[in-house]
Length: 379
Image 1 (cartoon, rainbow, N blue to C red):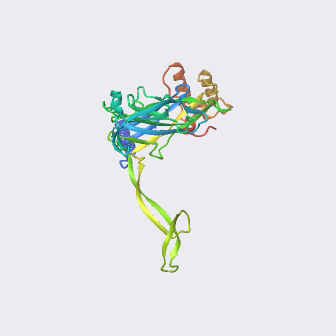
Image 2: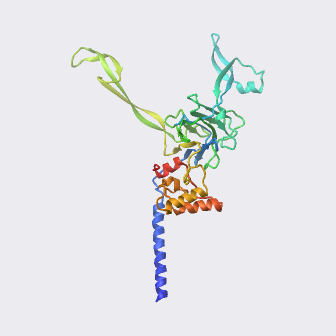
Image 3: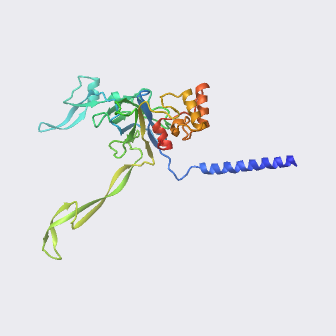
């Protein structure tokens, strides 16, 4: 009887386990109605001082990317900026006139490549466009755009608190420079951006700045494939409404006709003209973006019980005292939470022992901004 009972009990546990797994599988089933993105643009996170380089990640699953432009802004211009040591570059092009009317050239063709290959090649006009480039902000070594023919970065605001980046794989031919093939899963950075920290405001030991991706205007955020087609950009019909006010009616009366009118932007008005026109827009379900963050200075870390900048035996003893000795100091949970799970308990002590004495990689602590983002305000 005892054996039979044991078998029934085991059978029940097996059935219960299967049922639980079935429920978990149903809960974990993705929503097939949700649209998977075709491209993802991800700004990484970094700590200036330990690593002043910010990685930009591109994941593209369907199309080749041959050119792009994007604009980033820092929400804390008082604590960090992009490195923008400018150098003057000159873009020089040569042109040959192919039609002249009354001594004026009315049609011409560019012969820059021919002049480069043969300085004696005939040309009629030379055009020089001088601009300031900030290539010091970029690092393309071991990135997806290493070897691209055109890469440029500049601070539109001029102070380094923003950075506008443009790149094109195949600008001059031959030879043909290929773009970024697919699929890419973010294993190699798209590009690396260099940052520098500014003196922290008085009273701040560290600061966090968000790196914001500006996608509101396609002039500042656009990716194209090898055919020059914009990726994840589609037309959208919008109304254009115009208001008019009549100034002169002839004759003056019920059946009169307006012979003079003007466009107005507020009432009163006599007529409205509504026309539909198509404008492009970025489909954010097709192309998803993610802002990044940078830490400046030395942030406090969770589990640093005495907040001395180190995590060692003293912190472990203080955590034990706080948890198991009556009349503790009532430290915030942030000070006790070594494994960054939003709680202070025995698991934090065990994780710290494992890290201090067995040199295992722990369920690691997190910075104060990370902890507050995950767990809420420190109290």
